[in-house]
Length: 182
Figure (cartoon, rainbow, N blue to C red):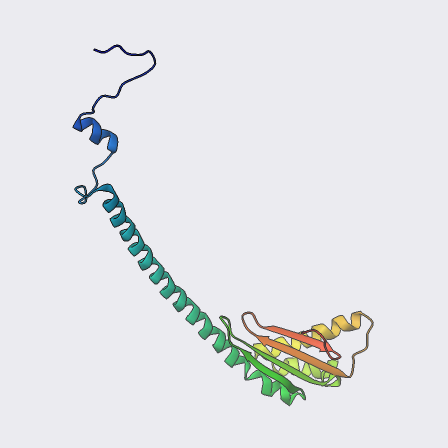
């Protein structure tokens, strides 16, 4: 044996068993390929799996998105029945628009004399439209706005403006006086 320097070890050739134990499990089916070819093949398999997962997710998201759009459109269509009722109360549609987006919406502005909604008429309308949730929502918004406005010590102005956004969830805005709020 050669003289060894203290603290320095020399490499000896490992046996086949020692090499396979240290390397871990044998690569399946492609063990005869060089490592770079094997890694490239695995990369392609992973990319293929990701592509399949991505395609499945896109399809699922499209289905969910289409379903949500259909529900929103159904909600919008159900609100279209409300506007003739509001016009019969004396309100006039001053603006009407549809926004097409991931979540479509309908925006309608109405106005009319504030006197149309005095306490007696509001109660009459609330009883008449008790079973119609959309009209009831608008009437409740008018009543609540009127009550809050009076708590400020203000008298009802001559005009009332309604801004209805039909989306998920719907919004009803009521203003006394011309709103400068977009």
